[in-house]
Image 1 (cartoon, rainbow, N blue to C red):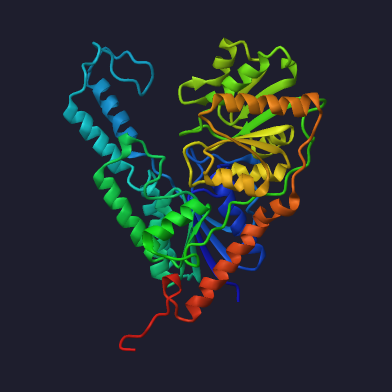
Image 2: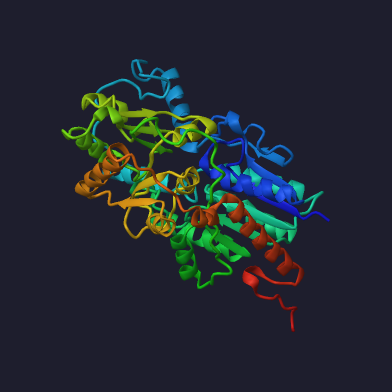
Length: 466
């Protein structure tokens, strides 16, 4: 009899977000192995855009879509401004539908309201901004419980709010829960000071403890994240295992640029601490050297034309570097993969996230290209790169070291015509198929534990009075 697997994840194919790949590929692998897989995901719309290259990637799976309601604060703000305009406030002039009413320059906001706004922001961001979607998922779970069952529940986040209805599903179906913790939840560095408050910390700590405490396994994607969860709750490696993101087989394509060139490519979103300015300055310094042919040096950033308020193409034009530096926006999966395959050296930005490994780290492995990573020397990303020999780690706060590394790459790739040779015997252990096999074995173990009456974490349940 096929095992009934219920998967809850906001991101899932054909969503092109990087967060969709791991859980989507796991679901496909379970389906191919004979499991009866049902997925509850976020509905496609303005917040979840389909990637045309993934339109049929999950064909054959039972996928249910739950609508994604808008955030409350922007919706209320737009409504308030519309009402204000209809009541005749201000001159009616604006820079757009969401622009503030025209009038005299605003006065400095009093300290009290400012604190109240920050406190409201911290409350609205408790867990994340997908709590209303998670509420819809919970209702969907209760409805399905009327006419179907599940043998195991798997929830993937972020968004971490998926863990809340997943915990409900585990209780309703009396099925073991597996939490896939792609990024740390409580205390995640993604939140700025404007989104933090003592109340948010207390509530998130309690919710994490509640959900994790009812999970048979909490799967982490990096050593540092697993270590923190184990230390926080006093659990061992069996209950908090590590299963890396892994990589897909690399698509066919050209091996680097034609001729002796140094073609560097960054593929992914620029957010949080992924600041490219040290690299941009390094490229500027490299092409200014008299012994460097700038026509043979190029840096392409795929996925984000800006970091915060820094427009990379504007910066390059202002510095006279448009011939060497280009930033392009989002590309479909296959087009982005072709850019990666055309590179000589790939760039990874992993600053300020010591316990997380960007998913692109594994995708870069699949390409067989050398990687340059700007990250702290003891971060999980740095340690993984040293274990696999896939490139070099550069201190993002050391411009001299970055400049020397770029010159060394130019000397090797352009002057000497060298090529990087990956050690596939080491890298193959991090393939997606290898990680999916580990995940399948984990699910086998928790389902077997359920049959033997084990509670979350592998402890055996005892009947009252026994």
